[in-house]
Length: 602
Image 1 (cartoon, rainbow, N blue to C red):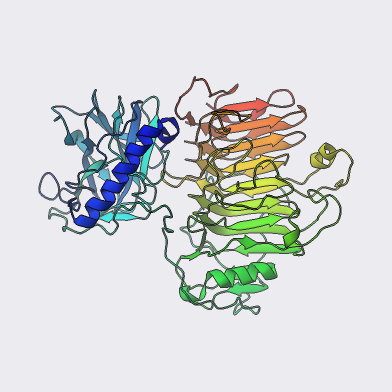
Image 2 (cartoon, rainbow, N blue to C red; image 1 turned 180 degrees about the horizontal axis):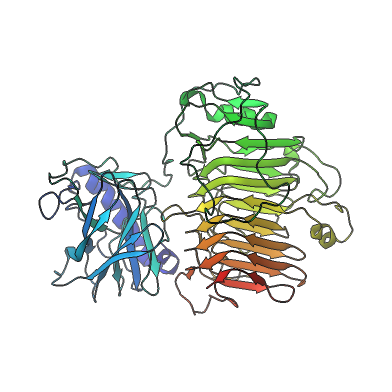
């Protein structure tokens, strides 16, 4: 949670001791296992009688704390609970929210005890649909909330209720929908759930226990240990059909996709990963296919599959064309350890290029489509690209792209991360630093940059729901330096720019925290966004939604048929010493004013 930046070293030590206490208590059986049944007969909760090892954090800022949950069966939310520790005083208000941020019910806690679990019932039960996500929350006006870090590192199930990875959420400042996450923390907020059936829910032991591991595992199905190579002759030449449940992007976006920015034809793939079973779709098979290049599809069976990569996929500079199409059923996971995909024409280990390595190479031309990128992590990237010498190249948790051409179509990016601090460092999902140009070797690099082809991001989702957002120092979802970007019919929500606190870096301020959704900086480049939905992103510094700077004031920000609202500033809040904007949710420096047409900017 953001408070770790603001705490003293003494407070951080207290948290560490609390985590250690949790480990020991679990190991010795001192903490009671959560009992799903709670309250009236038939009612269920997530945490039962659990007592947190850290019942009162040192943070004293006003904050809305919550838990994202999904009922396995239909029923009703009767009320909300939270665990109260010493110092968590003031008036507490509980709320229930839809996954899109609509408040469904609220109630004020009364007759609280000094510590322990507190419960309030809504005036009327709220109907819940099986399989749908909701958020239960309460407002702690003086902080001092219960917390356990690295608790929701995988799906946590208790009876008919489950919490996704990173299911603990929060929001500083005024009361509202909590969507930020921090280190998979649990804030001990709960729902009182009454299944539609009159019979009580069975008492089930939760399927996940909190741990204090520093290297959380991937949340989806693990890949098999077998390592078949990708086949060069596909078993079928028909184009894969994406399942109806895979619907990325802004479904309300109706903007026509510009020429050349649509999906690539994969009806005759060069390589197919897998032979019809999940176990045949391994990290080694994907690595081999990407190394070879060409059009790649997957044959992993009829159901969705997650392939956890043991290493980053690296694109050779000799690869002319690479298309990775997951058919709407494949998730490539970095396992919270590795960046997922890397292309860099300035990296000689991938092959030498002629001319200006930033703009001259006309390939690789890389397209990712109908695929999910999850749990990518670039925080530990050690290689420093010659094209990114000031930042250490540890942006781009899912995709790092420098040179050639990148296109992202109908893809999903969830829970990807990159470095937490650093000026100009960003893009938890996608970081781009240069694209090919028809004038690559102009002596004035800004002229070469001006003529670059734009990165295309079409009908894709970044975050999309509470607990699924991406986070980095700047640009919670997307970051670009000196590079034009075109975003069409996409959904960018619940992402976080978590650095501190604006640029340039100086003592006590390592830099970052701008562009909750998108961060771009450079000279002559345009950022164009159309038909998109940008909501519930957070930043600490400039632009809770978008940060755009053209240093020579020749570039433009152009937004059409797009909604950008409900983006907020994390602690220390807005207005504050580090937060700034000159349009709602946007910081802009460019040619004239930004262009907003047929859009909602709030």
